[in-house]
Length: 296
Image (tube, rainbow, N blue to C red; front, side):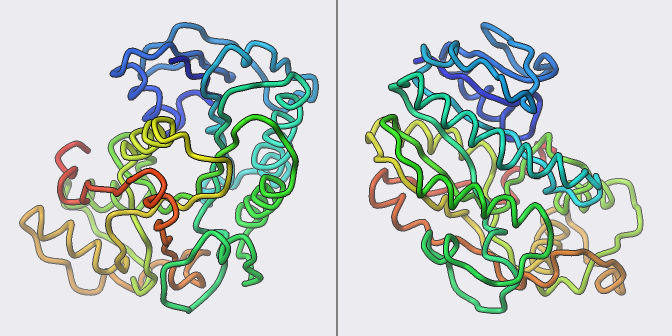
């Protein structure tokens, strides 16, 4: 089995690459910088903003994964041109080039539960719910991911293309400013914590569940399409912060909620219904947050 991953040193791409290492798969990596956290067979330095990107080397791969994104971390304040180029233009370009080159393998892109937008509706959303959502989009990241999903479901191709909507991914190696590592680090170091009201509800999946799901999709010969990867746990920010504190033998400090502001608080309930993917592959997430705290 040969994988090619576009995007080096990202949180998700690193998790997938490590899985490939453990399985003994051949692995080619494409990006601006050489991978630092895993082994690989070949590294190709490419600029994914290049409209003349050579995709011919991808043809020998059984699986090609586009694991690049911009705009998810608001604190990075990435330029909107970068967000739209990396989240829309580059993957669309690769799709069309693979089609021109008559690629025969599997191409994978990722959508986001954020595409549902600002909603107070409390239920698990299907693939159709996300694709057709007209709820207000709070940022360019959400808009750009919606654009890619609409393209994927519309264009014609002969190779297999899976577009996986993912919930909030977490695990060792993620950005330290994100909720779970931020909370764990602060507890360990006795630092003051600051959160929003904590009422917004999110679904969570351990990052190393994703490559396992991809293997299942290959084994079951999953048809092209849009698929939700349902996380193991769905809970409010306040609940997850409390869960982490209790798992670490601490109580939540008084006054930490309501002392911070974030742009995504208008999205009150973000959760995916993974029945479609489960029925076709048998995939069910298994890892819980408290199971992996010690790995941070």
